Amino acid sequence: EWYGHNGSSWAPERRSSYSYTGGYLAREQQEEYIAGNWVLKYDMVNTYNVLNLLVLSVYRTRNGSGWDTTMCYEYLHDSHGNVLEQHMKTWDGTRFVNKGREVFTYNSHHQVVRYQGTGWQDNGGWLPGHHSPDVHYEYGYTTVVGTNDVPAVNNNLTIYHNPAGSVIT
Image (tube, rainbow, N blue to C red; front, side, top):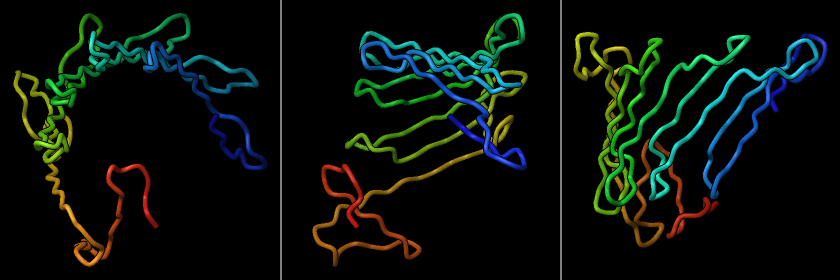
């Protein structure tokens, strides 16, 4: 539940409920607190393949008397279950149309080493920076044996034990 301050006190604003099937998130619904009542406003439904990998998330919003489908995310995976591409599509009233795409590249340890976000051109084709910011990240990983061998970047350093589970402080 989320609360907001109305000027004199804290009051409920919205809350979410989650449904799971076989341990996987199947549905999320969000309600808003309006005039003393909880009103269902948002619905997201996930679809998984036979390997239990997320392949589709569909989002709908309440229009008063029913639901409007607004957008979806489609996910493409490699043989190791890593997400290779995430496609964002918006609903044009009859079908989903491309809007944005995120592409991930992995190293041999299945760690993300590159991320590229692109948008869809109205005349077709993916174009960096169109309809979404041109986003590109490169990731690097360093294996260290002792704390004297740890390079700090911008005076920031977080150490995780291997296998990672929590931050060592």
